[in-house]
Image 1 (cartoon, rainbow, N blue to C red):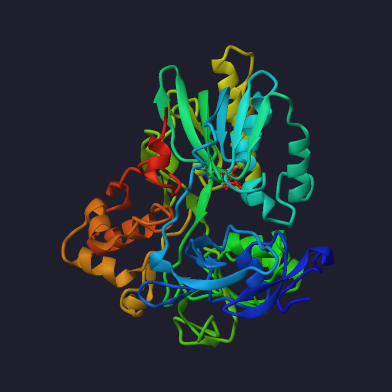
Image 2: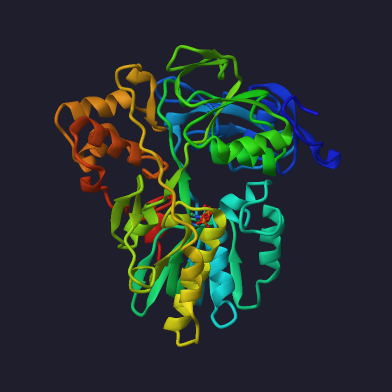
Length: 494
Ligand code: ATP
């Protein structure tokens, strides 16, 4: 087994890959970043400002494969004898090449559900008997965040993967599933909504009468010095490498952030040694984390850090589709009408709405499905789900006080696109508090994540430095494409 393998891999898939000229054991089908991680290699790219970066905190991961630049090492699977080299992060331009010979695929359905986590699946199972459904999911798996877990979750009778498989087995002939397909916007098209979506180099257009945004939440980015260092992991990536790929994030890890319980049971399942450090100040190391220093000056010898600081709803699909937001319980959430709609025809469910357990998100998906059936004239009783949901009060996500005085702000990355906390701090201190202008001046929220990960901390900084309440901060509206593809892909419609 390789240094960080947790499980035996299929020997028939074993191949050799070369990284920076050296041979390594890998398995066909594994993601490149995972294969290298299993070999103990964390440093995979270098930022424009020369900062060493890994694959699992800020994205994407530009690498050179067999001489071809601009490949994303987090997405490309291993093939025998691949020759892989580091590429400078700043040179990366993610580009979707649409195959001009392939005709646009068009589908017309009653309901388009974006996101196949518990909420999306709940909505689907509720409506599929009477309505046709397109389920659009950018990942290669169904089940969203729940699929990444192995520990049984409250409300479900079985282990997460068994729960999802059982739901999958219930899909009927009215359902069409689009995996590895990113919805890039929602547009009005007469009586319908048009959802352009991209699967590799294929443009797909889905016309639907109703839309469900079940697009989930994103992990909070925690601000500490060198938070972009290789071997710092976001919670979801740590879960993915362990539970999907059978590879450990490290031998001894520090769990930082306000929600360590979101990962510790999973680490224990694999017997991975961990320490909880609620107040990280700085990580240090040559090519990856070698130690973590906390705000009290304690030094923890660890080789990886997992940030488990809770999640906040992904607001980009909501604002792009014309929804409005409000700030409550420590996050921005869509304003919904009595029927769970952000506007006529567009529903929202799950952690796209508020932070609560997986089972509650599943119930909320069912609730939305029930409202849709009602709109189509079927006899349903959404109040049954409303009643059940009352047991689940949404969680409050704590707002951190950013430790401006105790940290070297130049070493803290607020956004993966080489935007340090110092850069944004200086602009705010100069009296500029409009996030739209801050974006322009610092490039915060202008890059690959479209602000999904970094904008919130920008708002928090403005609020903490100026005293403006978070409820009064205007977040910029997301523009299409809500996933990072070139505009020509959207424009190309005949
Ligand atoms: P929970 O948070 O409890 O797991 P949920 O269903 O509300 O429940 P997720 O599990 O995070 O939330 O599932 C959301 C899913 O939506 C993810 O699998 C994510 O990949 C997918 N998703 C988000 N945006 C898009 C998009 N634009 N196109 C396709 N899929 C998307």
